[in-house]
Amino acid sequence: MQENAPILFYDGHCNLCHKVVRFVVKRDKKKIFLLAPLQGETAVQQLSEEVRSVDSVVLLAGNEVYLKSRAAFSVLKLLGLPWSVLNVFSILPMSLTDKIYDAIARRRYRIWGRRDVCELPDVSDQSRFLP
Image (tube, rainbow, N blue to C red; front, side, top):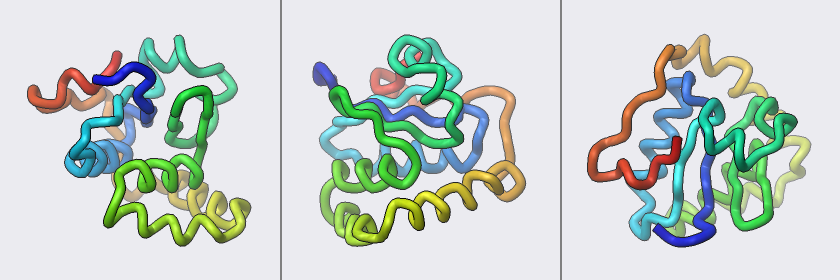
């Protein structure tokens, strides 16, 4: 685990978010990402309350905080090929890509469901998950 590794914060109650986390873990061959629920201690320590209250995954990379579609595009870029190719869509106006992101975020519990407890990571990936 590297110092100042990017941290991907996700909604620990959201089934879609857990699918995204599993997607990232599986494709992050260099193991650059750390992961933490927005409801956890790490989020409280690292992110302002304002950022934690936004209905979004949050990527903390260095001193930069990325939200919504910019967070998603940044994750894809850091995953490398072939996923970074999808960054071609980042040329679209952020107002449009964030509207699409928000539309999915508003419906995520209805479509994918909600859980009461954050899923435990696989033992082999446990060191990448922060409280």
